[in-house]
Amino acid sequence: MQISRIGWKTVQFSLAIIFIFLSWWVLALLLDTPAFPPPLPAFASFFHSLQGDLLLHLRISLYRVLASLILAATLAIPAGLFLGKNPRLDQYIAPVIYLTYPIPKVVFLPVLLILLGIGDLSKVVLIALIVFYQILVTTRDASRNLQTEYILSIKSLGANSKELYQHVYLPGCLPAILTSLRLGLGTAMAVLFLTETYATSTGIGYFIMYSWSSLAYDKMFAGIIAMGLMGFFLYILIDGCERYFCSWLNP
Amino acid sequence: MTYLDIQSLQVDFLQQNKSHNVLNDVNLQLPQGKIGVIIGPSGCGKSTLLNVLANLNQEYRGRVSINGQLPLEHIGTALILQDYGLLPWKNVWNNIQLGLEIRKIAKEETKTRIEAILKKMGIADLKKRYPAQLSGGQKQRVAIARSLVLEPELLLMDEPFSSLDALNREEMQDILMQIWQETNLTILLITHSIEEAVFLGQKIFVMSACPGTIIKTFDNQIAGDYSSRGKVEFLDMCNTLRSYLRKES
Image (tube, each protein chain N blue to C red):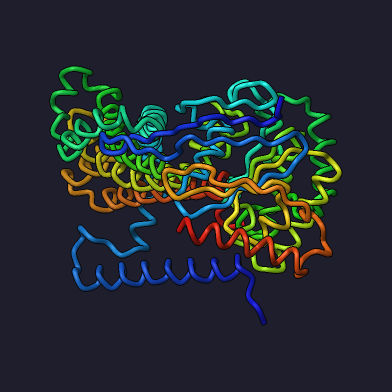
């Protein structure tokens, strides 16, 4: 009997989940420390904490990471498409990107805290700054490498610059943009954790570190699970966008 | 006045701060409603010539006139590229619709025109498919449909059938002939195939190696005659062309 594509995917995912939980369980048994509880007590604590203040922290962290990704994408996508389309301008901008890209932007956290305050803004700006580069470079390269025939064929139909972006550059670069968003999401989650461990009393990062310092390891793991699930659902969201907007890739 | 009139056309490309002469003193005349075929060695600037006519290259010297207008002013020109130029992210319907959308044609008329051209090209069943789901011949039909839906006066084709197998190629040549008979389009086509040039070209322009120029123009009486394929006069014409091309390469 032929298993349907969706059915096969479900089997694959179920196997992966079983594998992760088994490895976690074995590791917890081997380590035998309250700092690394097995899956069942950890999830029990997660659901218990959701009744308390975990949901509030989750909401704040979700807001920060979404705001950062949206800010970074809003600035980086048009800039990347523009630079890819205008190589003459890019030859002046590319060295600036090349020189500033490798600087670990996270070192600017103290500066941003002074300039933008200890509220959400400094955290959002720092995450956005880091993710911005990833999206910018990927989008620019995708835009630069678009096949000339697509551009010529649309130009020969009489398209102006706006129509070129609308019909060629944006849809043609969308798969690369979504890949950069997916990679950026991982970075954003890591930086989010870091920014939430300083000068704040909200967010999952704070929740995890506070639980750690008060030796509440079950709560700490509830926070870790919350952060993991948040990353997972955002990843699925981007995946869904790709399936919807880039259906031509797998018709 | 000749419909398509090119006089002393010269195109130079700047590469690594050096100027390269691609087209030199090109003179070409094609009356309205005729099919012209350009044939010449690789890299002789044939595509550059079409780009000038399609207003994709405005940096040229000399006189280029399409029905008395500059390429920039002439909106009735359509270009079909060698690799079809179909956008992979748009399905057949949306690819054909693109030119009409850009030219701001009303929605109702757009729908009517696309439905008619899909039927004419025999691709109505494929309207929801993406280019990746089409064969070479089907892509070529869509590319032709996308151009014809704009109801052009002048159709430029850059090696349109080069990636098709022999049977598909002959079928597409027949379809093109049929379209020409129905619409009385002026067509200028580039090809590498001597047989294609002889079957389609009422005027055949032979180009020299780079910098390209027209070295010989043939008036071909047997163009479009289905029965002539394989006959003595067809083969004679092919041999004449072949000897000119050999000299050039």
